[in-house]
Each structure stands twice: as structure tokens, then as C-alpha cells.
Image (tube, rainbow, N blue to C red):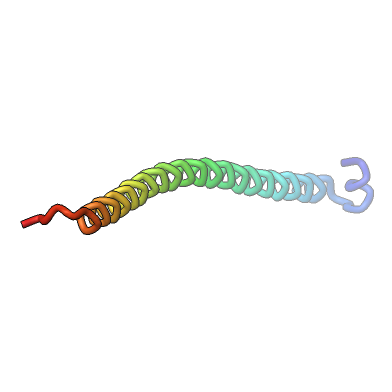
Length: 89
């Protein structure tokens, strides 16, 4: 503040400039903190979304496995039926 009084002849002008600078930097700090909180919130949301997609992937892979087992079972049964000499009807 002493150096600003050397530049400005009126002390009230120097104090006004000082308060403007302090308010400006406080506003920048609040903006940066808000950005930081938004990034943390976004990271948390991404973790939640990743967990939901992982569960959905597990469910769908289970369904694909069951479908593959049913197809293989049908193939084996049809092979046994058509290769046997016992007539079906």
C-alpha cells in the first residue's frame, strides 16, 4: 500500500485501487473453486456411470452365455436324434 501511495497522490484513490484488486482476485479465486467443485462432481458422476455400465455389461454377457449354451444344446440334441437309428415317429 505504501508503494501505491507514491504513485497516487490521493490516499483514498490508492485504497480504492487496492480494494478493486482484492475484489478482482477474490472473484477469480471463487471462480476457480467453483470450477474445481464442478470437476469433482463430474468425476463422481463418471464413476457412477462406469459402475452402471459395468453391471449392464455383466447382465448382457450372462444373457449371451445362456443363448450360446441353448444353441449348443440344440445342436447336440439334433445331432443325437438324427444320427440314431431309432425312428422318432
